[in-house]
Image 1 (spheres, rainbow, N blue to C red):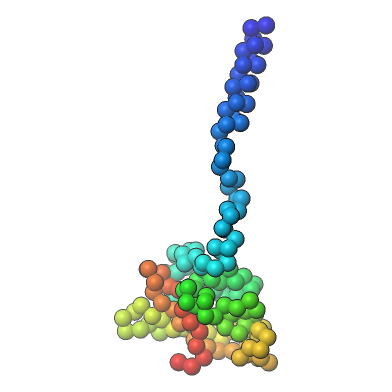
Image 2: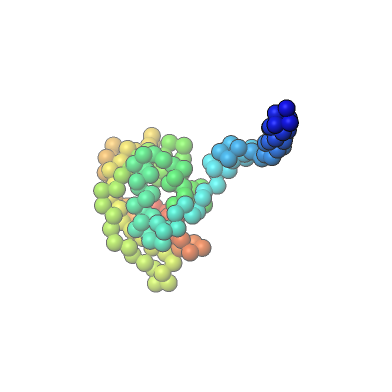
Length: 159
C-alpha cells in the first residue's frame, strides 16, 4: 500500500511540474505575430557568412535561388536598397526566373568595397519587362561590402 501511494505521489508531482514548466513559451516553430510581415519586408543580410565573404559566391547563390524563384532567399543576398528598387511581385529586375549561364571575373573598385560581376543568364521575363521576348541576357551585378559581407546592390546593363 505504501508503495502504491509513493508511486501515485511521484506521478502527481511529475504531472504538476510538466504542466507548469513551459507555460507562456511559444512552440519553437510557431510564428510570432509579426514574423510573417517582417520576413516579407526586411531582408536578412547574413544568411551564410562564408558565402558572403566572396562576391562571386554571393552571385552564384543568388542565381541558384533565382532558378527556383525563391525570392525570400534571394533577398538575403541583397542590400535593402536593392530589395526596394529591384524586387517586384512578378520578379526581379524584369525577370521571373533566371539561372546563370556564366559568371565573369570580379571587378573590384579602387577602395575594394564595391564590385561588379558580368553575368549571362537564361531567363523567363516578367510581364512588360525590359527583357520581353528574350530567353538570355547579359548584365552586370553590382555588389557592396556592407558590415563585412558582400551584398548585391544593383543590376546594370551598361557599365
